[in-house]
Length: 409
Image (cartoon, rainbow, N blue to C red; front, top):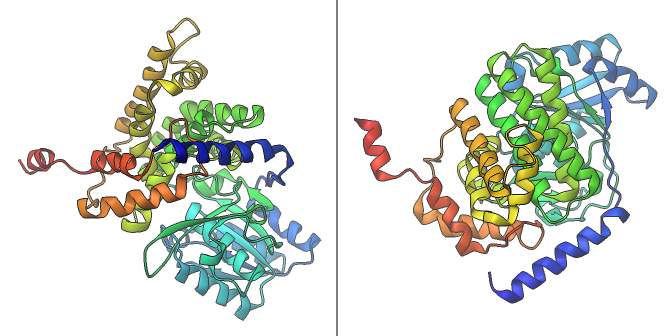
């Protein structure tokens, strides 16, 4: 990246960092069970809600406890369950149409980040019916209060229940973009471990590493606060202590509960301190090839950390000490390397590879452009990179011809 653009990016980021204490950030109020929602709705005079989820969640029966609780308390509901892995503008339009047709008064995003992002975008459209989602792309373009929004995460990873962002994919162009504004932060987050018990091991792993990516990127960035550093550290510790157990024994309620807490803390950290190039590249891959976001983050994380180099050694060393793979006497560079290696080992235990086969070489300049446009100047990354420099990550993730040959032997 040239010097003039670097200066511009750092001035932009420092302005946001200075403004942090004055911005209307808030954390959602935590509710411990879906069974507590009817009482909340009754207090607020709400008797008709829209549940936004996906077909996989419905087939697993995860919404049944919520539906039963609503029925027993006389609260009507409609369910939109066509949300896809990277929610599209079509998903938002269909769910919005259902909202109006059913006369709903509140929105529940029930599922992973995709369902919650779709729910946020529906809320944004309801708040601003004369503006397209594309017109809301970027920062602080909503300004208006959304209908009551409740987030129920079924995966412990996305942190979407805490964030001011909704990531949407244009159904026609497949361009993936973020809408960021404070009204998108859900009013309530339901951290109910029972809805995560049937999550398959691989999704448990990739979403858990998604949370790890949120925490690490927030921690190593240049816009941290004492609060976000603490949240990120707490999240990393909880993930290292509980993700393997949740992966190996999905019915362990304590591990599931701790992973939900980790995801929430990581979400609180990156909502204020932002993420980095792992997310920018992962979003471009999700938009173009529909690669699940948690999987893309998990694959990319060690590549990007290594690319940042010694600049982040001190912060990675602190994380290594926090999770017990180094101590204060360990040289910083050694501790940082140990932390990155621990992530690689984690990937190996969870059978997460190092490549994304869908990547086509001819797409790389376009994807890198998308990543550059998303990240710069917004993300306060430790080392600034332009589109040409970001292309390296896509080439790193491509399947190598010799690897493909080995796989056929």
